[in-house]
Structures are given as C-alpha cells and as structure tokens.
Image 1: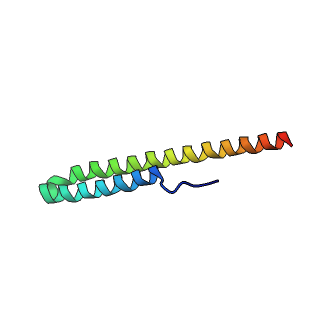
Image 2: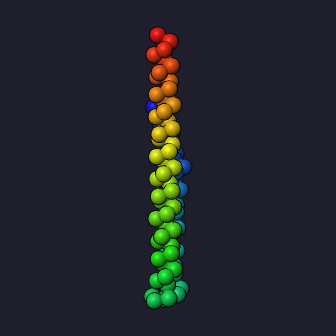
Image 3: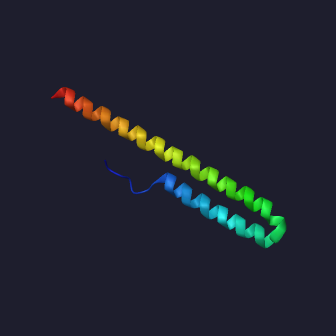
Length: 80
C-alpha cells in the first residue's frame, strides 16, 4: 500500500495541539494564575476531545482501506 507524503489528519493533530498549548500559556499570561485555571481546563478538555476525534477518523480510514484491499485481493483471486 502506497503512503502519501502529507497526512492531513497528522497535520491537524499537530496544529490543534500547538494552538491549544499556545492558548493555555496565553491565558496564564493575560488572566493570571487563578483566573485562568478554569479556562485552561476547558482548553485541555477540548484538545483531548479533538485528538480522540482525529484518532477515530484515522482508525475509520485505516479500516476502510483494509476492507478495500481485501475486496481487491478477493476479486483478483476470483479471476484466477
């Protein structure tokens, strides 16, 4: 199976995590320690939820590709 050099899901994962950490640090800087804590928690929960959604999307894509490959192999076996 040929792999493409640019993985959109990986780029989204890296970008979202970087953005989340930048937001957490910015909240600490702008709001101060105690005032930023709840918003930092919300940001962290959003980061984890987005990462889980991307992991599920990757799993779905991988399983779909596996099934397509199995169908192709089964079709090739039927022809011979």
